[in-house]
Amino acid sequence: MKRKTDKDDALKLAKLAALEQIGPVYVPAPETRQYRRLVKYRKTLVWRMNQIRNSIRALLMAQGLTMPA
View 1 (cartoon, rainbow, N blue to C red):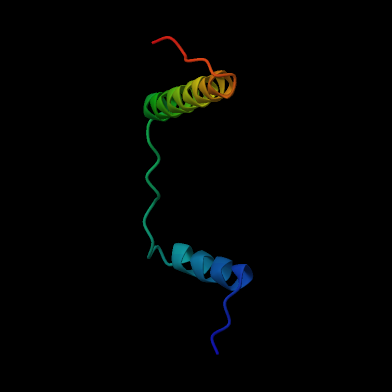
View 2 (view 1 turned 180 degrees about the vertical axis):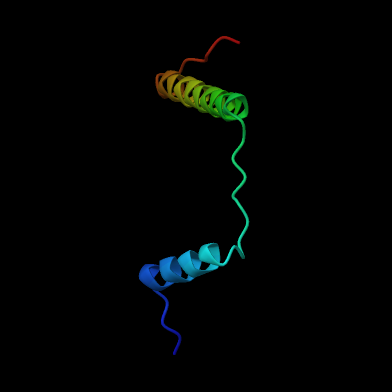
């Protein structure tokens, strides 16, 4: 049975890094990261607005009313 733990993984990565057998990790530019956060936040806001609209629509339907377009 293969033993796999975080400690073993860290040791293996440290050895590979010491031997320069692994490359650097790509990190996007700060502007790119900021843009991605902005897009993700906008998507979250749009989702929340839809949830609120749906909740309001459900409340109105429960009262026998319709939501204006």
